[in-house]
Amino acid sequence: MSPPVPPWLRALPDLERCILCRRRRVHARGLFVPREPWLYCPAPPTPGKVRVLFYALCRRCFRQPDRAAEAVEAECLRRMRRPPP
Image 1 (cartoon, one colour):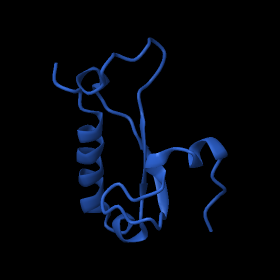
Image 2 (tube, rainbow, N blue to C red):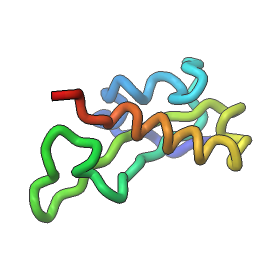
Image 3 (tube, rainbow, N blue to C red):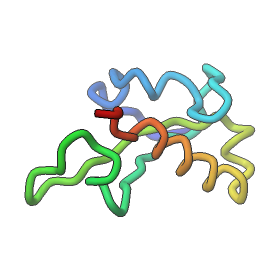
Image 4 (cartoon, helix red, strand yellow):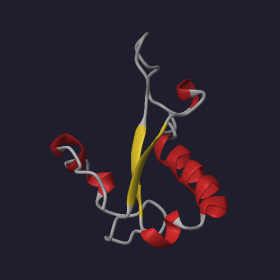
C-alpha cells in the first residue's frame, strides 16, 4: 500500500496520469531535477531554490526501470523546454 499523498501534491495535474503512457491508474510518483535548469526553464531559478517537475508512473512503466528512467528524463526535459523566442 502506498503512503498517503498530501493534498497539495494530489492537486498537481501531471500526477493524475502516467507521464509515459498517459494511463490514469498511477502506481508511483517522483520528481525530476534538471542538472542545468537554465537551459530548460523560462527563467533561471532564484538563488537557493530548485526547479523540479513532479511526475507519475503506472505500474507497467514503473516495472521497466531500464527503459523508464531514460524515457522519463526525456519527457521531463521536453516539458521543461523553453519556448522559442
